[in-house]
Image (cartoon, rainbow, N blue to C red; front, top):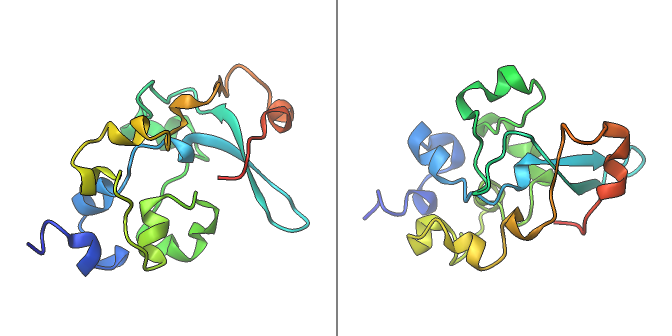
Length: 146
């Protein structure tokens, strides 16, 4: 039973790589470009998405993402204290904050497509690829806080 609910019994730092990777719910919000207000450090999500995101919110270049996109987000257990910018629904952030995973999370529901059905992923947004607009234009694509 403990293997089935590892996220309830282990800290992020104690998880195996496989367990860590399985926490990703596939929402795609990490792949949205973000802007930070330098004055108050607020983070604003945009509808500008990485050019390598697929229609099902996965990375088409996952293994090579750091080479292709040097500033690509790479979540690691040692960075837990900086997870404040992650969306409030993100499993990494939820576990770091001692909160339970939502019912729609693939580890709970058993259905990796459920996140799209309940509109938690970015699939319902009118996305623009980051190779189609300049970084200066990102402010024109700010969306509601996540």
